[in-house]
Length: 175
Image: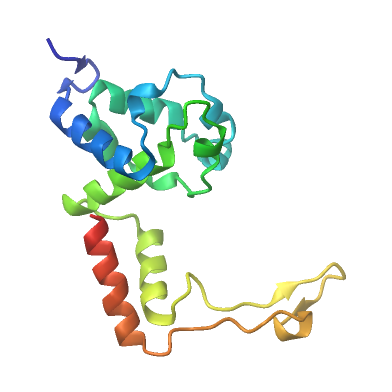
């Protein structure tokens, strides 16, 4: 007998759950099965405070095998990758790694990436940074450039084409 989500009538994807747990065990020697839903991961989640991402519920859905529910949801894109969920978990389950795996699956299945992520990726490919270097505000309400604040200059890729090729190669390998 398999679990069925009564709101969407989605069946459990047991084989896919096993595959995701294998990927996770290769990363951290742990699986989602160790999660006992204490919600410590959610209590430290920065995205939960703003966007209502609940990492413990993501793990619960994975344990039930309801993968399509998450892959087709925009909630997986709200994770900011702070890794607090992994740090706080007493069982060392990593919801952040589950979310990265689900994002990779979504992209591999042709799901449209939200616009902000696409623009960030284009910026990384073109200048090597998520956003161009900006001036920083100071306590006296003025803006100063990095060098005026004594900060070192940010480096950019010396060979943008080689950088793009290597970044694309890494991204394809991770999917």
